[in-house]
Length: 142
Image 1 (cartoon, helix red, strand yellow):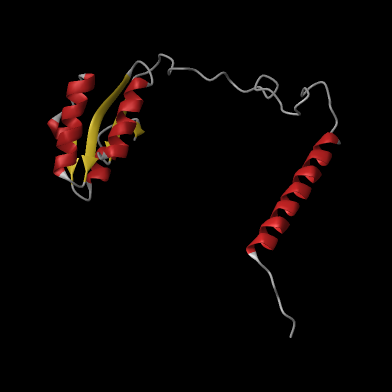
Image 2 (cartoon, one colour; image 1 turned 60 degrees about the vertical axis):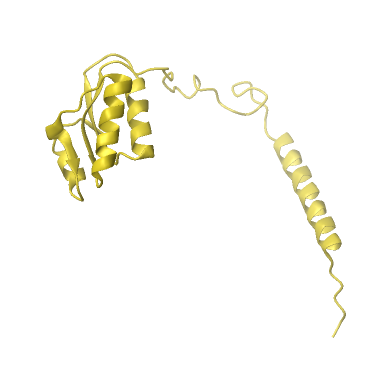
């Protein structure tokens, strides 16, 4: 049986060598790529060349979108405010959660911060709240 003196120092030296060889290999392979004029020097297509639509800062005006929020905790309420900030013609008409206090908290925050009044008949609590939000006549679920 041979004596195996493999230390951390030897391991780190070997790992560094493998990393350096890998980096040189990737560099040499990318230098072999054709430098066509269509993609520029980086080899990456621009959004215009890919015929992608422009990204807008806010949603364009159009038909009003009515949203329902399922889950009124931190993530759901944050998404609700992001939705309202995304553009004109957006409203939240139904909210639902398993816990009453979360529904009440989001309803209060929407009224205070965005002047959005969610009708009491569209505030649902319980394990079936998600079904009731979906059936409340919403266009979008958050």
